[in-house]
Amino acid sequence: MAAAGLLTAATLALPAMAGPTLDAVRAKGFIQCGVNTGVAGFSAPDKQGNWSGIDVDLCRGIAAAVFGDSTRIRYTPTTAQQRFVALQSGEIDVLTRNATQTLMRDVSLGLREAGVNFYDGQGFIVNKKLGVKSARELSGSTICVQPGTTTELNLSDYFRKNNMTFRTVVIEKVEENIAAFASGRCDVYTTDASQLAAIRATALPNPDDYVILPERISKEPLGPMVRQGDEQWYQIVKWVLMAMKEAEELGITQQNVDEMLKSEDPAIKRFLGVTPGFGKGIGLDEKWAYNVIKQIGNYGESFERNVGQGSPIKLDRGLNDLWTRGGLMYAIPFR
Image 1 (cartoon, one colour):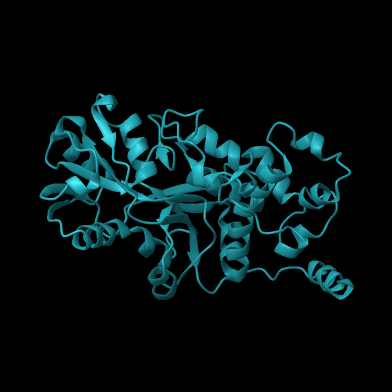
Image 2 (cartoon, one colour):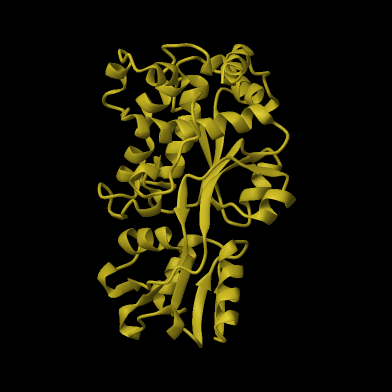
């Protein structure tokens, strides 16, 4: 144990080598974040063009960590088919856009997954007038779906496995899918269940006319992605996400973070940069995690205001609760 402690101390003493993405970001003075074209609760602009959502909060957190200023960002709205190309080409610096992490994406795109910021599963929404109570009753239906997504493959696999037939209406943009579904062009709309809840709450006329069926036909771990080959940028994105989770575990909020600077808890002192080391280790200011929580809040705060009970969507935490409360959210140790 003593040897391990010495190794940790030695590691913290070594400054991170600046990577090309961080150098480029600092040179231009902002972070270019790839986001969705508009999914309430994740990344969507209001009428004034101000973006908000869980994925937007993560982007803002990265800017707070790098610059000490969460406003130093620009957004590139991307469709499901555009998103990975935008990151591969360098058009964006990081993809914070409800992207599912899969084996083939991990090994074939030249991209790297930097953690999970939302655990989800694919579902189906229908108009109540159809009288459908289960996905097993959807054989012969017409289903709206986005191309270039895991949703397409999951849909095909589910219907084939259950000896059911279906027809698809394939539309690239979310808003056009919603319009097609609302107009009756398709009987069903399928995507991640959280998006279905957001669509029902904010985008469909007469939300009470629609029901999200109980089945979840897939695992959809959503999270940020960066280009392979830049270890420092990957670490920054990964640890900003971890910091938002760790702060919730430690009871540090946007409101009490300044008071927490006075804490004698050694874990809190290290986390907030009162005891130095983490900043140097990652190539940022020692107060990088403090800046994230002061300007954005912890993971739970972001969840509640964007998709939780403080939002129109009103999702329960469920799998996205902390591991100490039965969920899957778990910060890698800050040591």
